[in-house]
Length: 407
Image (cartoon, rainbow, N blue to C red; front, side, top):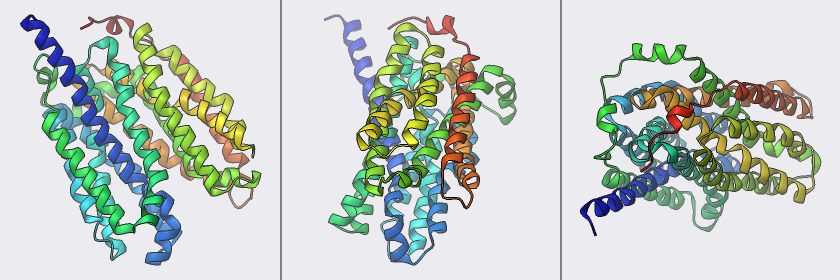
């Protein structure tokens, strides 16, 4: 075997190992965020806190993401994704250990806030890492596989946490989650080195806040950020309020959990397939339009039926088609901003998405008001998807950049 062939094989192996290390850490960030969501009633009774206090605990993540996302992007561009993602990973690991001391509610709050601080430094590193290790025509596929970890973490948090707590207790569950987070952070630190033949070293620069101004003036990046604002707002709104939306149709909490789980699991499958098709045909825009349009058509049926078979079918197809749009938006962000400013641009996009998540959740509850029907809030979701579809039509494929060299 030639030496070049051997080195090429090592590069391919390293590429997938680095991506796997990020995927595991990203999955842990989402698992740690949502593992209290199915325990709201249990925690209220144990610590004698109100439902509002628990909701605020869950909202800490998107709120802190809004505050720290741009700074995380700047750190990643200035110091590299290994430093930025590693910093976030170790913050998550340290504060996950704080939650082990479950005797008082304040320890859960401190631990959860610390984990939320670390999350944007982890999540904003995906575009920089992918651009460093993967050729242009495989980057959307790699980004999609990276986001699979996020969706898997969500699904495990919602499905496995109550089972684990019931089988053991809350402290044992927190110990297990903390141990997994420490292992994920250590694995990333061990294997996620910059690609010696990649662009990471060239991309690291003294990024300043004023460097964001050209990005903010870029019309295409602004479009992507607005779509992210609306799309992630839609996703957070649906997953947060799905149970009360379906309750009038005879769907109980456990069934609503199955519907939400089907949406996320099929989204994982779609995130592995649709971005790969985008790379194959070197197009982002058409698939992004389809992602938004399919969600527009399926949202009303999803929110207005009590037939479990139909709900599982609709939620599965909705997840398969809609959730991969997140990977497409991440790839478009890096292609618009370029590798040097990928971290900042990703930070701006994810800031917009998390801000949308906070505002849409609140807006749905406000529009519903004191009435029993959630239909006005469902109409808001449909309007959001309609605007998203129109905006997707106005994005542009950067085909010259997508036609980059293959490795």
